[in-house]
Length: 510
Image (cartoon, rainbow, N blue to C red; front, side, top):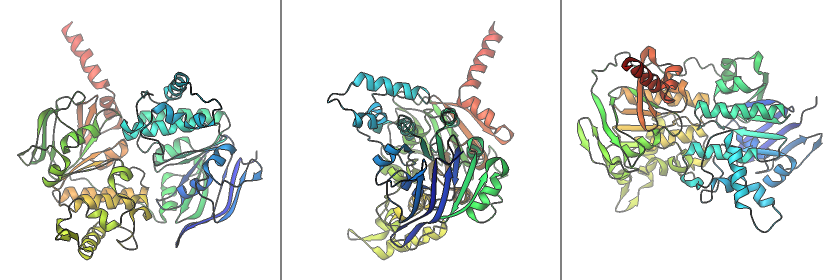
């Protein structure tokens, strides 16, 4: 069998930065070929070339037996190459249905659009993924639901090759499983799939081969069944990663003082009577399925949305927060799951990003003092091992892991007492993940309250000292120590533990 797609000796530079240097890749029909590497390794650059976003400087693309030139995304789609973007590429002000069928709508020959047919086709595609209201504006959806819409949009294309760039970064295990079933069906239809992910478990579960890039160069292609996660990680970073998660604090017990207390918090109808404590020195996890209310809870605590009842206290002092600006002034900050939408300003410099939350210490008489701004950014950059040429660089020039470090530095610039991290390693490579985990643990050990929201159960279990699990806007339970297992968390997150408790209660009564 001949490859359906081959790339040979691809080079690509952006100004002085050489993103790709002679990389190669081949894809067989009906194969899932994983592409792995640290952020900045060149994976997304190659995928943008294959999807027609920009041309290579040098090299050949061989598709279905002949060389092709992909001058724009429409040309790539016409050849039969589709891309599920890592960064959400949807129109926020139109409906879910219109986003999903955008390509079909643009290609229609009739002047009028059959709105009912559009909605029905969108519902059919979403039925295999996740029930999302097709009439809802995309901009009103949470990031995870937007990612599902992005996937559904790609599935409507008549493609011979589909590229998935971090498709599960915002999804929980159950949503990811639904995607994997669809990928298995695509394989059976002889569609070739290039799959980019930093999640080792899913790479080894669904891929046939793995290609590794490092620093814009091709390192190796391996048969998945003949390699291991450790070998792949070593090839990715050029060194052995011995301990991904830092050691937990063995002295943490229930008697530790509380940094933050939340009591009977509710909002306009979704969050219901949520109570928990964040203890000094611990990393507290917040788990649950998509739609459980994790981000909504963080927003209510920080004044990003309105809470109707309940209280929040910091070190015993009641907080009456009505806006996020008040939250920042009180030392409570929130790092959004949407790094590029709400976490950083891509077109501004690293220094401007880091000092953006509070300019008082780097300004005088209404003017920002550039040297003071850069000095503060350099201090925090060193603390977080930020890799950059200079803090005057735009954030867009950094890898995903370093962009996330800039977002964390922005939080630290206001000397917070508590930081809520929402998906802190979304779209971040294995090496940068390990560094971020160490940063979070060090913050906790220095007395900063650390609350982590994550859709990755291995991350919650490996990083956190305790995990609060939400289900349908309520606290379903809490796990720690030997009870911190994927099975117990999933039972709580899916409501099974609550259902079993109700059944046992009924049996006792009867």
